[in-house]
Image 1 (cartoon, helix red, strand yellow):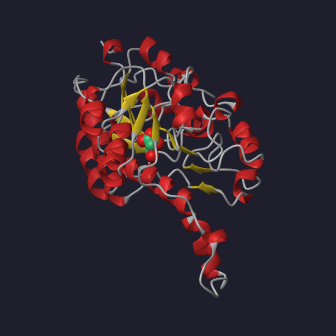
Image 2 (tube, rainbow, N blue to C red):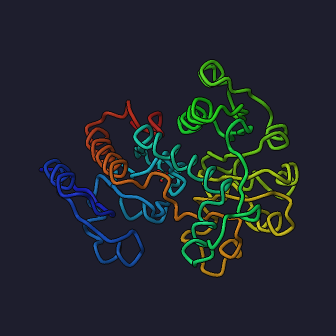
Amino acid sequence: MKPSVILYKSLPDDLLARLESHFTVTQVKNLSPETVEQHAEAFANAEGLLGSSEKVDEALLAKMPKLRATSTVSVGYDNFDVDALNARHIALMHTPTVLTETVADTLMTLVLTTARRALEVAERVKKGEWTKSIGPDWFGIDVHHKTLGIVGMGRIGLALAQRAHFGFGMPILYNARRQHQEAEERFNARPCDLDTLLRESDFVCIVLPLTEETHHLINAEKIALMKPSAILINAGRGPVVDEPALIDALKAEKIHAAGLDVFEQEPLPADSPLLSMPNVVALPHIGSATHETRYNMAACAVDNLIDALNGNVEKNCVNPQAVK
Ligand code: DGY
């Protein structure tokens, strides 16, 4: 008999067929208590779980006593209670690598869009305000040869450094838990403590996952270290930045602008003060959201679940040590 799995995300037809060739699949719309109740038997029998953007916590795991592997269509896994998974020896699989280049493109998009005020001035053109040769009130600031600070030098940070170094001639600072020889040798990146990075960078790019240590790491005190001309970019996780502190700093013109792909609350509430600030570019968490990359992530997540339920957790597993 094929193992049973719960799928809580829609998949392209060919990937769904691949999943169904290995497992008996029950597709549900979300992981809410109501949904779990409605499909109680399927949840009780499921050995695998595949999807994204829903909380997987102890309360859910208690309803899934046979669960052996979870597979998220994302690199980030802050929606998962990893301790609870570990205690139950359940594998947590994720999708690093396949989205690296696309997320680095998103970061560079935010750098360029905020610095050159591309959205703001394009909007003026659409409103018919471009009636004569433009003056300084339409100008942006340079990106090339400015200093780029990368907070979190993982795969995505490295891909951003590559773009900034070769494409824009930018000196690069980075702050990370360990030294990155590749970043230093290939992109001339200089390691430094967070405060130095914040003081010296023209663009501060946050590429950190959300953990207890990174929650509100960039708070009012840290933002105050930035240059008034500097731009804050966040494409890691929203709660790494203390959003009210960022809003205050932008209002008080303590920093020049912000480019944000992630927020403390997503979707961003319609009454967020960020939405009325011309110097804020707010994107709807598009980090990895291209057709090609989202397909590759879904394919990777399907393969990860097949691997994990076959006892293979060598690749793309967050907690191999916990799996028996
Ligand atoms: C991830 O995979 O964690 C990204 O945030 C998706 O864009």
